[in-house]
Length: 73
Image 1 (cartoon, rainbow, N blue to C red):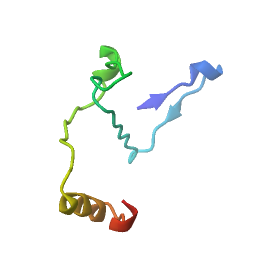
Image 2: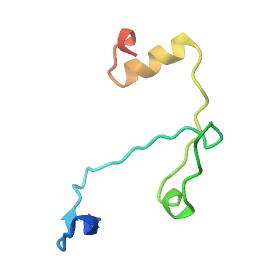
Image 3: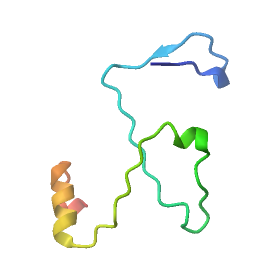
């Protein structure tokens, strides 16, 4: 894929690196002051619903999996 930054007035495209990944997170739109993403934007993502982690052991496991020290999580 490629990208053209037309807002900046660019006419040439930027090619993405083959290993490029984009990960985004959003709290549910039911939270105060939030709106649903427009359908055209939402269609470009794969949605995964993740329940809130409440158990300390779950939080520690997640932190360690991504190289975060539990005391920094």
